[in-house]
Length: 255
Image (cartoon, rainbow, N blue to C red; front, side):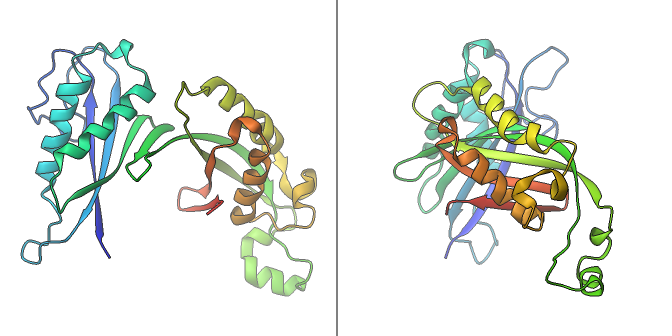
């Protein structure tokens, strides 16, 4: 068994920036008032924990490694000359910043609050893309096999006869190939297959998938996976995550 540690490094991508200056680590390195793209790098490492300090690695060492990487690899090229796929693929160079017994497991590049790329450094490496979508829908949690009092006791307010609503968030993760990622087609496919189908609907009454299936967040995640997995463009589907609320979500994947 190994412990994993993840450190988040935030930065504005500027050509002439000095990333050795720590600055305001909360808002990002190379801070300033000029316009520049903002990114987040998340590095996940594993290894033995030092029994004396309780550290797997000093997070300042992770920060230095990430800052040096951004300065050496990202900053020399103008931001508009990068593609997101080029940025995350080049992150495999970060493995050199860590010496045994510390191992870099994965790097995530968040390019917006709703879109991210992840490079898992296994053999062979795996590159994935995640984007969030949202829809609003009503549902009622009710099992015909249970009596009305039993349903009320088990589901509480979620068993209201007229249903209730949520603003759902769907995070779809797919594996990226070697070429350019067809983002526009991906977004159109998810919109057509899921968002347009679910948005402003009563799931129990309007969607045949839930005619005999209780529309819990667990079942919603599975149904969305099934709808997306039939789309050839999404042959690399890795995971579907559905947030029912900011505190409750379910994942469905093939493994």
